[in-house]
Image (cartoon, rainbow, N blue to C red; front, side, top):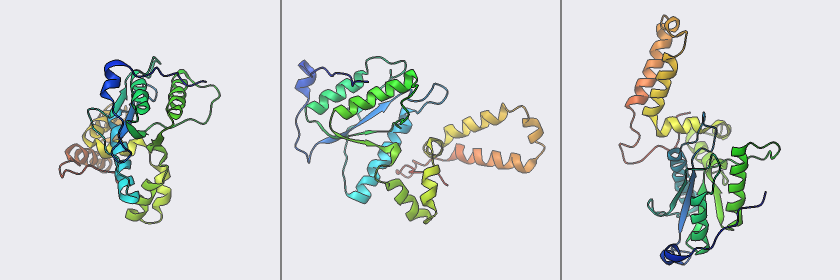
Length: 233
């Protein structure tokens, strides 16, 4: 599947783009709504937080600085599904052509099985091919390309955490970054369970569930000014 051909930047947009020397160029964030099926989305807020975490790890372990402006350097694609024209991707390509960025960060797992792709998966593949055609450093934080997340886990939890890193998924991060929302979802899921009234007879189980959800509902990991970087294992 060929990558989408980009149109050159023209007019006002081109006038607003500047060519920065390498030491002053920002990095761009490309966030995509509806990556997964509608029943299991990958919220753009979560993508943003996971990318910020990886940028912090690059700074900590490799001394790389990836600054960005939240009102100029974050490109959000709302209409990935059903597939349309990807206007944010086109704007990103124009900015890259104007030498505005040194890297692009995404949180977008890539499928290696190209047989029988769904319409959504084909759209993601087309986006990947277009990003690669930009010929800029592309960092997919979902792949932990430099194994920095694994390194941090090992430092905090010991050598056994090397295997823990491979078992982490977006659900763990959702609980870490949005605990109150996770508590609402958990409470609703248990309340809708047909056997909930039977479960309530087991006070130990109910107490454990209610304690965990109440703790999550009260938790504010941003109160100290430093957000979470991973949920408790």
